[in-house]
Amino acid sequence: MADSNEKSKQEKSSEELAVDRTELAELRSDLAQNRTLQAGERTYAAWIRTGFTIAGAGWTLAQALSSSESNEVALMIGGALIALGILCFIYAWFGFKSVVDFLKDSFREIDDKDIPFTMNLATVSILSVVLVVIFVFAFGMLLF
Image (cartoon, rainbow, N blue to C red; front, side, top):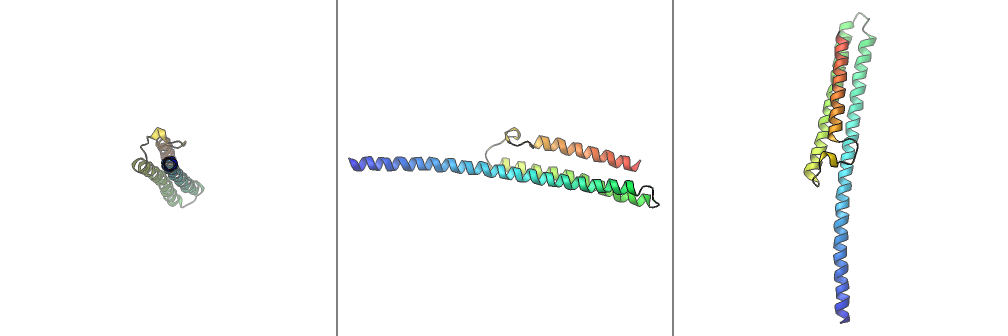
């Protein structure tokens, strides 16, 4: 009788251990998902900073050299740098979208609204479109 009680306790503890391991595995998966999303956000922010820097350098160069005799060359170089900055914004959006798509395909079913961080795909999309519009407008001002 004592053996059956002891055996029952061991089985119960192994069942509890299995439940604990399952919960820990789910927690590790959730944490991995969060780390992946945060890495995507950091990469997005880095590309946005790079785009601002390149486009700002183009605007500054074009404005600084606009009164010189090489005005056309300055406008072409400045315009090319602004266009490159715009391409950085677009590339940043595609990169972040690929991270969100990867998370949706690889981890538990998530929706854009389930992402627990401030930068979900809708926010990133709006920010990217606004930045592209602003710098296209700046490029147009540079030409006229």
